[in-house]
Image 1: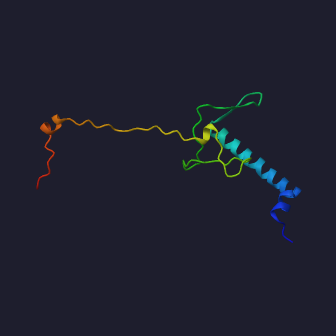
Image 2 (image 1 turned 180 degrees about the vertical axis):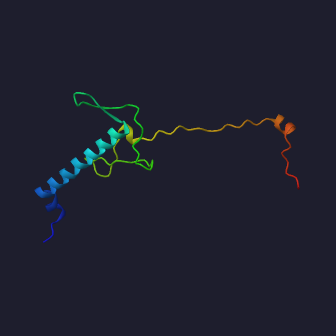
Image 3 (image 1 turned 180 degrees about the horizontal axis):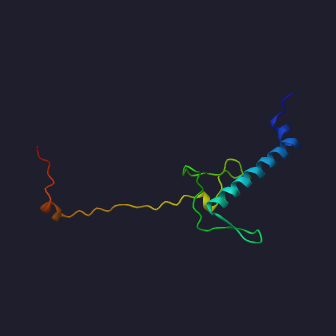
Length: 109
């Protein structure tokens, strides 16, 4: 007989399975961070997160967004989960002098 959601969440087997998946997910995330250089492990096994970490990307260079394992539906807010975009714009100067230098009128060929 299938379980209801309430019964499922109370089930010890389900809780153990969920915790096991969470631990595997966190270990894979830590492994990705170590490979990308986002995490530095000292001699005493202390983990230091690099403040200038690049965003996590897969082998194809696509950004990898990681879900928070403790808050479903929300992304992690760590440094490697942020894409920093530098806004670059081109500013064109307009001056009446340009009309004297360049012929800007459309003409037939």
